[in-house]
Figure (spheres, rainbow, N blue to C red):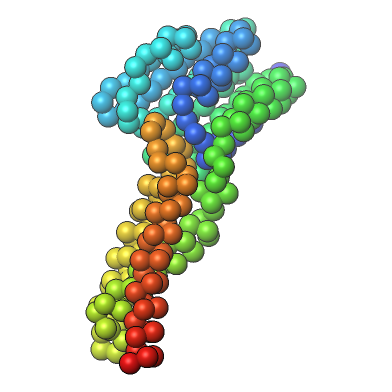
Length: 224
């Protein structure tokens, strides 16, 4: 007789990753009497453990590539299992929790519990981090702002024989601003990070550093 296997996949939202979150998830899995495995993958060293207490008490590297949690129901190792993989260097959608099992009620119950645990650590600005459109618009806005400021200093007109180098400069600024936004607002934050307020100040500083010179230049041209 064929088996019916239920499968649920939870895409992890942008999160603040710390030991408290991993301990909460691991403790929940162990309370469900599952066999568990925990692993950290990094360029410096890897960490593997079968108990959440040992895993949390170990010294984690400052830079982590992946955190993996695996759990199996002892009575049904082949079909009832959970795998959680957090890729700290990836974008939204690549990190997930996958729950499989023959009992649909069990799968749904575990999915709901894990989703509730994860929601508590969701970043306040998760809506910005996981939106490609918003990040692209922010990149363009910052790039154009800086381009205006540089043009004010260099006295370049927008449409002229200088258009090709200006286009190259805009592309360079766009790449730089996109990378900056990725570093300021990563999908999964781990370790010491700048406060959200400071990050907003940095974005405002970049914006006004481009706009203010342009405004001053226009005012001087008007009055002179």
